[in-house]
Image 1: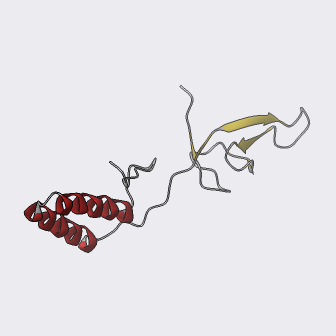
Image 2: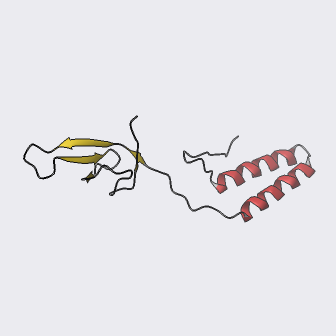
Length: 105
């Protein structure tokens, strides 16, 4: 459907959904189907009045392990593939950029 955009997160933009409904309503008006056009307008009003979620896309990354030598006080550091930031811990999220780290397995 033209005007409809699905983002990777599974959320859609309200503006895109309203544009799609508007396009559909205009098609119904052009076809003389005024009752359907009015129903589509009601759906648009309902959609405008729904609360919205405050979401951000989730970044994903992987840790790459770097060996620091036999005599280093910390033998390994981990580098985030998303931001190239370093961490001393191999955690589930990058402390530098917040990327969710994928688990190999």
